[in-house]
Length: 49
Length: 217
Image (tube, rainbow over all chains, first blue to last red):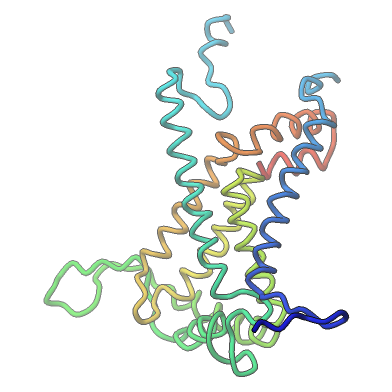
């Protein structure tokens, strides 16, 4: 039988899962950064000044 | 300049005029970029933090094994780009001596990396993770390729003369990274296609951050 962690007991997450979450987080951050730049900056303003 | 000259002047990024040529160019660049990015992805998993695959108090195994190997061979008469032209003559006739570089690399590892491997490992892992994300998403891809040149060159100097290693494995990583640095693959298929015109706009408005980010794409 699998031991079910009790309330307050620490659940260990494997380093591989943490690494995968870091990579997914990085990819999401890159996409969000791009969306923010696309929304915030108008490229047609390039020669405005 | 006539209007015809203006029309024929190559645009930034994709120069070819026919759709087929453009498609071939973009697909080839995307394959190369994904390929090198995926190479670094595959190498993330045997040196996962926080142990980096190391055992016995960070002295053996995983990342610690390879950095020790770089130290062990640092003082050998190391050579690069070896060509064995005369088969009867032992050793290569044409090569580039890199003994000075391997000794400097070995000293740096012994004095800086090994004593601080607990946080240096994060830096190595993080840089390789960054290369994977950058080259596969086409995100600040020139910066990603620059990081690949740096890591690839360090590996080439440190490990290409190690037993059972093939020097061209490392040299090819560096060469491909140099090509991708020159091309900046994100301009063809990735997020940089969206970012670059906007960074350019920021740069032309006098933004230093925009100018810096433009260099990275």
